[in-house]
Amino acid sequence: MKTWKRLAVAGLIAAPLSLSLDASAGPVSVSQSVNLTSIGPFGSGFTPAAFLAGGWSALFPFTSAAQIDSVVWSFSSSAPGFSDNTTWPTSPEPATPGVELGVLDDSSVRTAFVSFVPTSLSYDMSASPGAAALVKSLVADGAIVASLGAFYNYPVGAFSEGTTFDGLSTLTLTLTGTVPDRTLPEPGTTALILAVVGAAGIGWRRRA
Image (tube, rainbow, N blue to C red; front, side, top):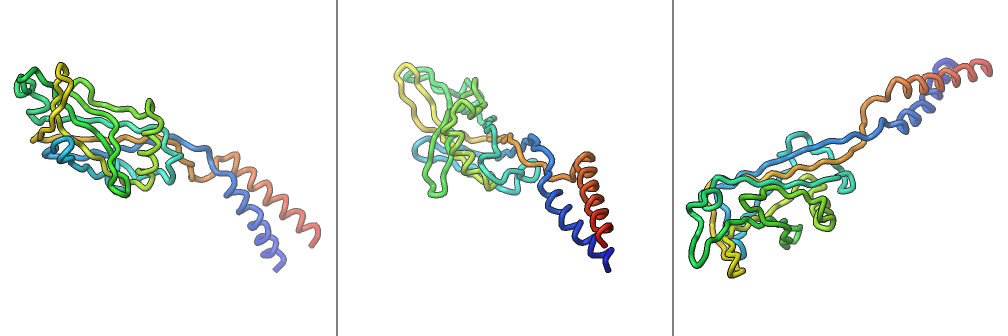
């Protein structure tokens, strides 16, 4: 009975020690793409793009917004109205296409961030910490809804008009961050735990 008591008490000491000695945190990156067959007009027909908790390239690793270090959006489209410059309007002046990116919060309030154009198809939010903080807070549970609006921009007249881009478009969201590594303790940690257990066992044996 004394042997079992010694082992039980030693185990109570070792257990909290092993829990407190987690391995160091490690970087991780996940991404998800949403395909759209049409993007509605800016201002009057925004198209939602839902990123789902189960749709990431790996099991969603983040448990809080603080663990997400960077947020990067990228866009591609084979829609003729966006990718084929022979279809772009030329009257009243040559126009260029764009797709505005925004997100919807839990109350469906839309916040716009940036516009993708054929010469700029990626948006790293590290340059916009306030906007990045909003996205991190919304996506911390693994899900977020983006909102896209298509338009043509007339630079000379300084105005835009909504349009529709029919054809395959893809919006990709990539998250990179640091999460605790919950793997087994490293050999050095294991040796320390065993040393504590051994010392405890010797002490109780002398008193027995």
